[in-house]
Amino acid sequence: MAEAFKFFEEIKKRNIVRVGLLYLVTCWLILEPIHVVFHMLEVPVWANRLVLILMALGFPAVLLFAWVFEITPEGLKPTVEVEAHKSIRPLTGRRLDRAIMVVMALAIVYFVADKFWLSGRAPASASSPAASPAAAVAPASSPAAAVATVEKSIAVLPFVDMSEKKDQEYFSDGLSEELIDRLTHAADLRVISRTSSFYFKGKQATIGDIAKTLGVSHVLEGSVRKAGGQLRITAQLIQASSGSHLWSQIYDRNTADIFKVQDEIAGTVAQALEVALRSAATGHSEASQEAYSLVLKGNYFVNRGSDADFNRAHELYLQATRLDPNYALAWAKVARATTKDSKGLPKALDALQRSLRIDPTLAYAHYELGRERLYFQSDWSGAKAELDRAIELDPDDLNARVQLAYLTEGIFGQFDRKVSYLRQVVANDPLDPYSLEHLASSLFLAGRFEESAASFRKLVQLSPAFEGAHAEYAVDLVYLHQLREALATIETEPDEPSRLWALAILDWETGRKAESDAAVSRLEQKYASSYPGYMADVRAYRGELGAAFKWLDEAYERQRQVISIMTVNPLLRNLHSDPRFDAMLVKVKLDEWKSKVVANAT
Image (cartoon, rainbow, N blue to C red):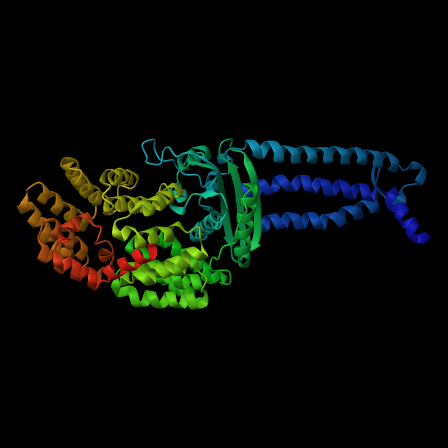
């Protein structure tokens, strides 16, 4: 006991504790700025770890140095050589105390400044340009230029790929999409959908301008750096009005922990906005990391939109199912990328059945199966059952509600509920051309031509290269008798079959029969097998009923989407008084479906 007491007394006399404390506080004060600077300079994660390891190794070395050596008026000397009456240890101790207090004061000042001043005043562009996902704002004339801001609202900007080879864009995009999906399930929180958030990718703008364009009060941005099996994810939640950072965090994880990190980020953001995040069935909680990455890659290509990208996505989804045959979401994605017409239906249905055998509670699979039943099988009751189940599993799924509203009401000319849901979809994703097209075409089918034209006008301003939009807009203008504007609009249509379809209708309306005949002939020769619906539209509009019914029968075999809208399509109204139209309704069981809907309603 006496020996231990003597040892501790020696530690105290040699100022070992003071030296150790000063070293630890100094290391902390150095580490924080180094961490920030390394991140800004994209220094690999291992460099941070190396600095930490060196500091840890230095700690016992410093303590040993303080034990062996002592400061004297003549400089450093081994402690054993310093006579007790000549030692200045007490003075050294007081100096060390003052140094500790100074360093701790600096540490406190830095902490307070970082917490309440630096992060609060840092603009969105404070991070390096490469790390900022902020993008250009739509011009003042953009259809989304003035959107009302909702207090509890957020846009998740695409996280930036900061990997050394810049080959992880699909992964950073996928992470952003997953966060959007999780936050969508937060109560009382408006979340901007993917297309509008990603509209800003690769462009320059301030967070404030982006938030104003999308009508949100908060923005989440971040970056992903992936090296081998290691991930570094940074995320920061920004209040748009002030540019202040409400929360920021850096996650160093193994790729196997990606699902946990997504939940952690989404939960923290939701808590920061004072909303309750409900868990949602995402369909990949048990997926392998490799299969999940393939699905993210597939999503990346699907969102690019071309046929080649769509086919590439289909192959990636299939690869994911080969790696992980029990990955329910991957099978559902295979189905979505399979069905372009009735030819792909058997494979799509098989994929969806596999998905639902694995996870019967996957809302997305039920939604996709409902769409297949509705648009490719004309199975009205089966479609309703699947869409009902999708909504039961995911009450926040507006897309399923849109389809169900059409199936039970819109298909019989009652579009109010569908249009209302679609307006919510557009509000959540104001820069998504597909949502705008869906709204505009639904308004056209409802006979609300002025509203439809306004939506089409926004669409062609937002996305001039959107195939079919100019032609649909032009036909809308025909019904509004704005024929000169219709012709000018047709001339800007990039898709030839759509342009010929609209031109045949416009030329017929203006009495240019020969020109209309020429457009019909070219459309039939080049595109009839792929677009029987276009042929039915044109022939019916021109009053050529026999040819129109011929093409409707062809559409029933090849392109069932045409059948699902035939009762409300204004271009087919000339057919309604013909007995063959009633026979067609019987053939596709729409008469039976209408009776069932009416009976259930009463």
